Image (cartoon, rainbow, N blue to C red; front, top):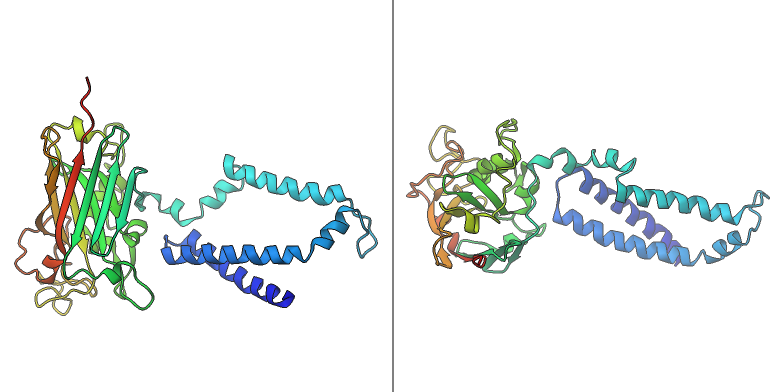
Length: 353
């Protein structure tokens, strides 16, 4: 048992360190997180077994038994110095003391904070086999509930991929003003949320290649153009905090709820990569048909509670992408069957007396 614990601890520790480095220096990955959690628990168990076999050592040292070199070790020094070290490191984590800020600054999230999307605290997402449900609550007793019913061309297995299945479909859900300015992004699929580019259908692709409409809207919040240039006119301001909370009852012009979705490798006779890059139907390898775009106008002054999103258009081929909505969908085939319908329910805050 002793030898098993020693070698298992060695191998598990190496895997734990590797997953920690990936989590720190690379974009968020659910697979890496699972590995880190599982092997962290395994290392914890092995360390517990190892320490339980060394209880005699701790007992002898605390009694001040001489070391093998003949030196009389102080039990107080043995306990106090490690305790002070651990106490300082713990306090540094809570109070942001050295070396915490310097280490955090080296991480992926610190270096790419502007382009990483994280939902507001009042947002909950629930993926089901044939549906995806999202609810955004505000602190003003108002909420927006969105239910996407997937169509026949949606692959539920791909939504929860394994090393032997395909990649995830990419989805973005957001709200924008009546003049097209981003209000708040509610949800973006994992890969697109944490990195500007990632492997999709075996190819390195940018999220603007997959969700071009949302990504151009996201420039307003991130201040970073899809090509990486800094947009000096974008970013949160006192007048624009990128939150839906006030728009449910303070915006007389209303707002739009929008959904953009795309699946990999859904080529057809018009949209594919085996043509000149200047052709209207050219799409990068792995992209296939462009993203589909749905929207619903929410009127805060209307008593209407339920809205059915309408198909508006698509994000354009790789030769067209500009962030605009393309309304001619005559060349779309299976992409039109990706979504069956999208229902929106709006709960408005109670009227103030």
